[in-house]
Structure formats: structure tokens, C-alpha cells
Picture (tube, rainbow, N blue to C red):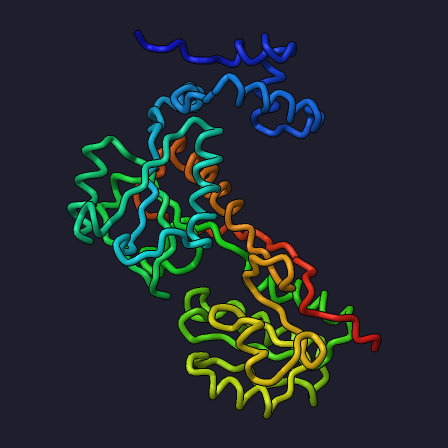
Length: 343
């Protein structure tokens, strides 16, 4: 026997509120007080309530008879080779956790689809498999290369990509605000008295984000740093670190902004004490003691689901005429790798 589906009325009865209050609370409507929203969300989770995307599609259908019912499964398409990946990659697991969380809240099942394993990397075959499974909505995970391409039968899918690494085709994307992260970092370390910032990036990582970190740095440097303290960025390999160390000792930045192979341990191996000799800012920090930017990747995943939901409801299949990009701000982590220089 099929288990009875939990409805808004069930949640309302358990929470002691109206059905409309439940509906508004689960959509995070600002008209419902935060405490009430959280209590209703807890009741919904306890009852394992999941909204039916088909009902949302029906509402859209009533407004336009050309609209169809939205699919209930979203494929999270990953182009990497799963056999060559470590068990846990923080960056991508955060994206996926956000996609799964918001997908569940909106009534979607998220199906992980490994492009290489399931379709041999062939776009036509992948399209046939996805269509056979009745999947219309696709979430595309970041690529390993900085200029990823994906050849699917796009006319049959609604799709959103995560991050900036997918170069072609240019579909709707949700990404961390990389240039904004540089601006945020500048604001924080300038408050502490740093006046000679340096940027060190590996070329591939810089290219993956369309050089937005580099562009942001050059703009902030031109705006806030006097001419004699504007250092040329280091764009090059950090392993082996010889070239980076030469740049550090030649340019003498008082604070280093970096990501990737750049780490406090690497800088310390150059004979520099952090933060006594040099401040350190990481552009994707996951350690509370390391100052820098928390990229809020789970939130990127959540917003991507919301974007895909809207596209599905409007039946916007195929490639968009104009690409849209949603940026998510990072959060500053104070950490311990900067100090107040008292300037």
C-alpha cells in the first residue's frame, strides 16, 4: 500500500496554524515572523513533508495553457572521472549538499549522474539516458578544466550550471562573486593597516573564474593603494615554490591574497612568520584559524535549484538567447592570519 502523502493541511494541523501560513512559511515569506517560520519548518521536517512540484506546475499551467508539468527529478551532472576522485572534495560536496537541501525542500529528487561512468563522456548518449529516465532539469557541476564544454541535446532540457568553469554553451549560471570577494578582503585588511597587498594565483585557477580575482585585485589596488605600493601579481606555478618565493622576497608584500596550493604552511617554509612578517588571506578558507573568504558554496547550490525550478515552470527548454548569471557574496572569516598593525 502506498504511504499517504503528507500535505500542507497535515503540517498546519500539527503546527496549529492556517494552511496559508504554512505555505508562506515554507516559501520563506517575509510576512511570517522568523520564529514562526522556523517552528513550521521543524514540524514539516518531522512529518517528512515534501511539496509536490507538479502542483506548482499546475498553478503555472492555469496561468498559461502552454505550460506543462515540471519534472520531479533533477540530474546533478558531473563531468569528472569518479574513479580518480578522493572520497571527499570539500568544494563540490558543499555545492551538492546545497542542491540536495533546497531540492528536498522544494520536492525534487536529486540524482547524481556521472557523465563519464554512465555515458562514456558522450553527450548524445547522455541525452538519451536522461530523456529515458524522464529527466528534464539538469544541474551541471563545475568542470575540472577552466574552459569546460558540454554537448547535450539541449532542446530537451532546462539547465543551470554551477560556477564559472563551463565556457560553452553559455547557459544560466549561479556562481560565487569572486571579484566581490577581493573587494571584501581589501576592506578588512585595510582596516587593520595593511598597505602593500600581493596577489598570488595559479594560472588554471585564475582562468577557471574568468580572471575575476585578478580583475578585482587590480581595480582595488588602483583605487586604494598608492602607486609605490602597487605590486605586480604573481600568476604562476606554486609547486615547486621557487618562483613564488623569489617573488615574495623581491616584492615584499605585507599581506598575501591567495588560493589553491598557496597555504600558510607554504609561506612559512619561505622563512616568513604569519602574521608577524606577513598577513595571509585565503580566497576559499575552510579553517577557522585562516583569515579569508568563505565562499558560501552550499548557498550557491540552493539558489541554483531555485533558478532551475523557475526555468522548469516556464518551460524554457534549450539554450537561452542571453545568458543570465547570479552571483552569491562570500562571507569574511576573521581568523588568526592577520593582525592589527596599528597604522
